[in-house]
Image (cartoon, rainbow, N blue to C red; front, top):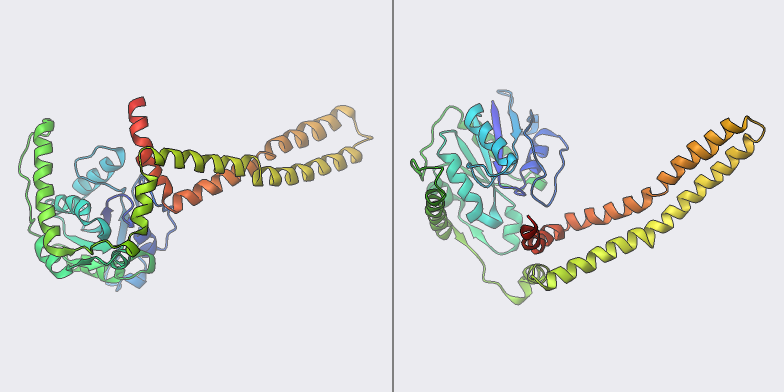
Length: 331
C-alpha cells in the first residue's frame, strides 16, 4: 500500500517522512527542500504488519494547478500514479492557506487523512482548532500530529490504512473551468478561498494578541520592514562576511596554512638530495598548490556555518520577503 505525503512547503512533511521511514532526508525552515519524490517502507513502529506500507514524500505544493516544477511533480504523481491513500500534512499555524490545497486533494477521489501538524506550536500561540468539527466539514479523518516528537503519526497511518479502497465525498467541487483563462482561474480560486475561510472561521479560535505574547510577531514586523529590513539584512551580511573573512575564518586559515607550510618545509628538507625537478613538483607543485586551495576552506566553512544558522533560525525566509520586490524588478 502506497501512502503519499503531501502538503505545503515547510509544513513538516519531510520531517514526518523521516520519522515514519527512519530515513534522514534533508529538512529546513524554508521552501524548496524537497524537489523530487522519495519513497521508502514505513517502520514497523507505525505499521501493525498486516501489509507492507510505503511512504512517498512529495515536493511541497500550494495548489494542484502547478506553477513550479516541484508542484508539477506532486500534481502528476497524485493524478497519474493514484496512491492508495494520501496523508495531507496541514500546518496548524496557517490553516487557511493549507486547506486550499486540501480541498483540491479531496476532489480527486483518493482517500485523504489530514495530519494537523505543528499542533504544539499552535497551542503555544494560544490558538484552538476543533478537530472533530474540522473532520465533519472536510468529510475525512483529521489527526493531530507533531512530527518532531512522533505524536499522532501512528494514528495518522492507521487512519490511512483503514481508508484503503474507500471513497470520500468532496466537500467542495470546483467544476469545469477554462484553465487557459486567467480571469476564470482567479475567480475559481477566490471562491475556493472563500469556502476555506468559512471553514476556518467555524473551527478555529485564535487568541487575541497581547504584548507579552507577541514578541515573535514584533521581530517579524521589524525584519520584514521594506526599509529597516534592508538595513538589517545588510548589517547581518556584513557581520557574516566580517567574521568569516576577517576574524574567525582568517584565524583558522592562518593555523591551517601554518601546518601546511610546516609540512612543506619538512618535505623539502627530506627531498633536499632528490632530483630537483621531482622535488619542485612534489614540494612546490603538489603540496604548495593543494595548500593554497585548502587555505581558503576555513573562510568558506565559517561563512556557510553562519548562513546555515540564519536559515535554521528562520531569518533567511524573512530576508526573502524583503528582497523579493527588488529582484522582481531585475527579472
